[in-house]
Image (tube, rainbow, N blue to C red; front, side, top):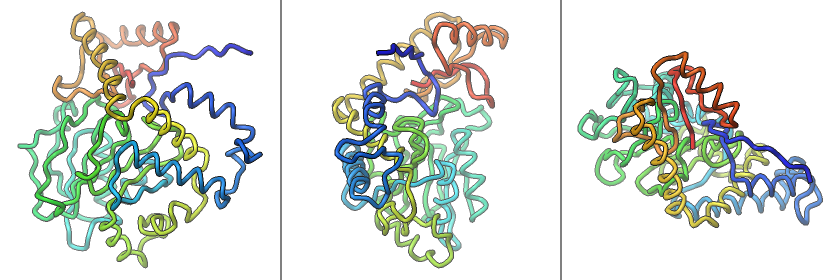
Length: 345
């Protein structure tokens, strides 16, 4: 058997997948058990794939304790497409959508939403280079907003919300969250949200599939817009067709399903949070101890998924990246828009 040399991958996405998942993909890629065809070949209308899709949804529901009144959709186009789909489906005529601007991806979401309708930036830390997330006291929310949008973890800046913001009593104001870079890294209270979306490739699967968890009552807004919205951009259409309106990203759904099974075997989200917290605390402790490294995020906003830090000069950072790569530590260079270092874990 050929020995495979795997580096330590700190990329933010496509990110590392569990080795047992990769090994199962390798074993089954030529022919799925009892199917005789590769997952890359089978029809999305076949009983075999419908079974894979149904089991993946069931396992997503198990992992996140998704309530029965929520639909789980497997879509395409990444989280970036959701920047448009959310306002196109949920922003009512004459209504206002509130956006919490805590990072570069939230800023992109705001720009796309403004193409659809009225947006109120409820709070922003852009002037502070997104080094922290806004506090509850800073939120200037619109009464009866169509929805409030947040990004739970900011991949580029290395910050995260430790608690969900309070956006109003009951279900009056829907909370929408882009959870791409920390989805299933810790327990998530689905019932506090009206819609959750995540591009799988940062934290729960390969590139190609986007998971959307949407409360059923919000689908009524999509239904009202069915005649005006492009069909592929309508949540209600995808829900009615159980994510099979068109050919779904079959391989990505299959691999995501394997990750869900692996998560369940590890003990679920409470167990995986302990692992993630331990990893992050080790890194942050070293950054704080030495004085050689400088963390870029406020300590009370530090992400468990994306540890961002700087060195004293850009020349030293270039040397760090070069030597880290030579040592088998890949993907530690920070996002091109902010520079520095980033360990996505």
